[in-house]
Image 1 (cartoon, rainbow, N blue to C red):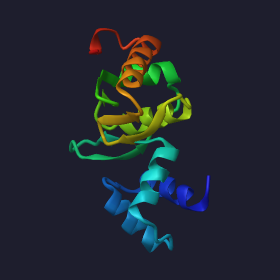
Image 2 (spheres, rainbow, N blue to C red; image 1 turned 180 degrees about the vertical axis):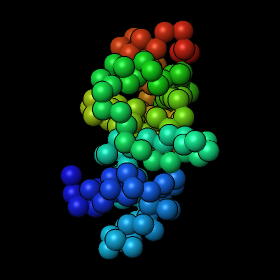
Image 3 (cartoon, rainbow, N blue to C red; image 1 turned 135 degrees about the horizontal axis):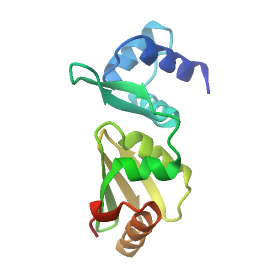
Image 4 (cartoon, rainbow, N blue to C red; image 1 turned 60 degrees about the vertical axis):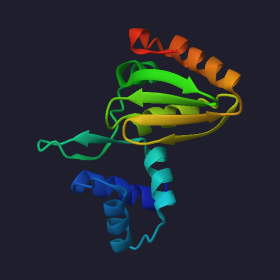
Length: 150
């Protein structure tokens, strides 16, 4: 973990940071002028999620560390589907980045790249057949049960 990532954790622990622009501004004030793409990578690397506060405002927080990989998927994936050579994984609000980080860490073959928002993950693979197989593998391995579609 680098100094910038440590600063991010300190910031989200001490104040409400609800979007990447706020985080970028706060980091700049601390002497870390960074691009939005760097912030996105740091959020993913740190496994940050967005969680609602008492006012239902979604702000960055650390993911709960007591969840193992299986529990992370079972408790947060709502639906897995594919179209063409892309998978779409719907998650509970604020958990997609943490789930996506776990998918990335699995080093699955044929994944060209992933992109996570607050509640949706896009997974790009090379062919439609690979998308179908990966969707089936994720559904099977993480037992998303009747929450799946494919």
